[in-house]
Amino acid sequence: MIKLGDYNTLRIVKRVDFGLYLDGGDDGEILLPSRYVPDGCAIGDKVEVFIYLDQDEKLIATTLRPLAKVGEFAWLECAWTNEYGAFLNWGLMKDLFCPFREQKQRMVKGQRYYVYVMEDEKTHRLMATAKVERYQKRTGYEQALDFSDELLRYIQTHDGHCPLGDKSPSEDIAHTFGVSKKVFKKAVGDLYRRRLITISDKGIFLLP
Image 1 (cartoon, rainbow, N blue to C red):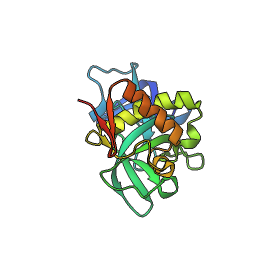
Image 2 (image 1 turned 45 degrees about the horizontal axis):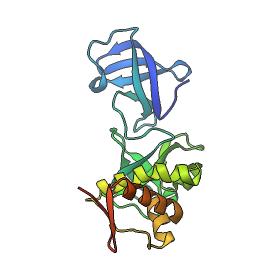
Image 3 (image 1 turned 120 degrees about the vertical axis):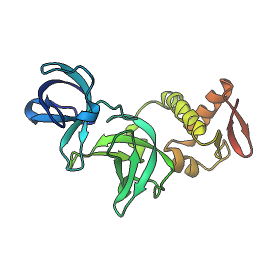
């Protein structure tokens, strides 16, 4: 069975002018467009591909590697918005949809957001949610260790600065990162002990 939003190793069954068709089992044949076909492929060979849905909501394969797959967290940039929600750049031709109901605040083009990639239970479409708390089921200590790496990536992608600090309201921290103030402070302490950041009244700054 095909794992949507994940990597699958599939056998090549047919070659056409516009790409290859792969054996998707019960899901039928899945197109791998020409632009993603590795050199030297032959009928019967197996290729590792990422499976998602194209503009027509049909299964399609790619050898590109997205910034996150289903079940993973990532900082993604908002590429554009419309009346239904935001579309995030996750490294594939088709952007990842984040509906308004899954946003903590209205997403703005050009800004990055910490999201969880998931398959919608009702529509079976791939989507993102910024309401990540319900998917972070680790202990506080484990969550703080994991979040310290996310916080470091946030600072690195925001010109070396995070305006929030130990004295920031817990609501602002939860609104921005989706974690408690306790987890945030533990992560800050971890980065500080590793001599990766410095802390001031203006927030957190990345050390050279």
